[in-house]
Length: 450
View 1 (spheres, rainbow, N blue to C red):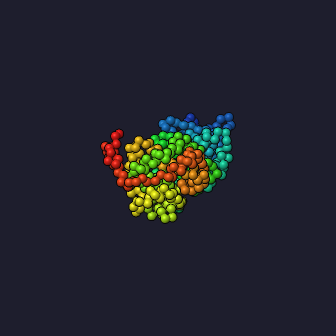
View 2: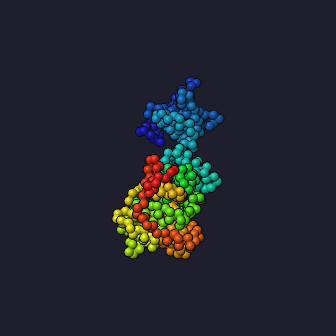
View 3: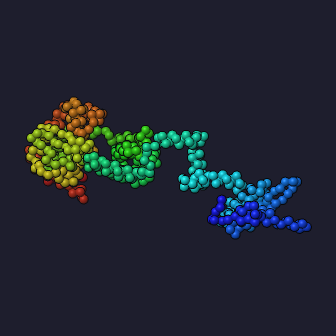
């Protein structure tokens, strides 16, 4: 209890820690202190009184300008309390002197227990009361044990942005395609900006609410959710999440995509578009319609991957959406469309060709649905091949998707007409001009009215 080097001074010879000063003058009505306990410049007197044969010891001191008195039956208790009060007065902590001895002992014991942890007593009590409120009638120790069982392997204090950066690096090192990496980077960086905290704190309700708040198409929203699900699976594999529990993304459901309905061109529509197409649009129109290669894959495709002698188009792993190599056969009519072309460099030589392609369709009064060329190829191809597995290999898709979305959309007779579309005489003389600024379109010298 001795703080700040204070000493306890006494004038009682038998007790070096207490100085006793006795004043017993007969005939004097007022008697002085029995003892004086000193700590620094602070002095607390102890008075001895006797009543009905019982001796009591009274402390007398001032706190906040008011006189305080404490009575004890034991001299030792009185001396101990007097020393405590004197020390607190000396260091300006008079507010603690109003604790009873047993309360002060409890206070000291609690401080000693928390000393190693470095947690202040008030903070520990607040944390306990909050946990007690959350636990209800459950045992806090039992709940802590269960929590430790589930989270013992979890690496703490890992934020979502940190995991996103780590995941993107791993995927790049593992050879993921640039397209897939780009999709992951765009979605997950956006996700990390919205949720910069620890991954353990993310909830399915928050993720679902965020996705619903975005002004994106259902298909885009589903693609973003798939990226987020991959992210949480990665976090769990790195022990940033419990391995035996569902992640926050697992219970977030994909939204029904009403645009999943497959729309295809008729053979007559495709023939009209191709027969009016200028040479610069033939590669993307013909390859898209008769091989089903995705637009993104087509944009990365080089003419060196198109082998007319072997009748194959090679989609390399770095070009494919699924990051796996596949070989697409070149049909007879596709070979006829590609043969007259100059096949050097990139197949899609300019970014505006896709825009010109849909503009040509508008000039011909034919609506251009999303992914219509790929949808058309798969639908007509399965009608010809009668095998979802084979078409899935060629299209780079799963047999279940092929079977679910494309089966029986067209007939074998229609498919025969589709793959019989050939170039017309004078095909390479076609000319199509479209002024994006004014919207003016000219097809083979004829101005197309809006």
